[in-house]
Amino acid sequence: MGKLLKEFKEFAVKGNAVDMAVAVVIGGAFGAIVTSLVNDLIMPCIGVLIGGADFANLAVTLKAAVPEVVNDAGEVITPAKDAVLFKYGQFINTIISFLIVTFSIFLVIKGLNKMKRKKEEAPAAPAEPSAEEKLLTEIRDLLKEKK
Image (cartoon, rainbow, N blue to C red; front, side, top):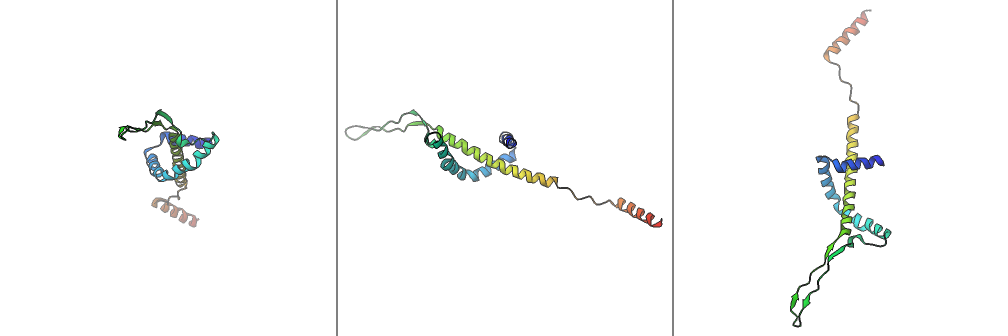
């Protein structure tokens, strides 16, 4: 398991251009699945473990919402303004999604590299003897017959 994590760290930090291109393509394909996995399965479980918090809604209010101000005639004096929020819960969801996508791509690349190594390690068929070696073999065989 430690070796796997070490390889994952090397992949995530030092991946070459081909690995990163594959990661982008596969990451895009897995995007909807991973988003659902994180938002609908993982984060609710974590929320229950830490006391029922819904990570998607965790935020710090930087500036409170301003309600609409209307005069007696019904004219809007000041329009309503939404609250300004620092949504760290959604950021946590996004980080977890990223880690899942990256780890999935890592496992795919690891499998492809393993298959590639097996092909390279396959023993090559012995080379066919050259014309010179064939001639020498014939001479040897003829000399053996004469004895």
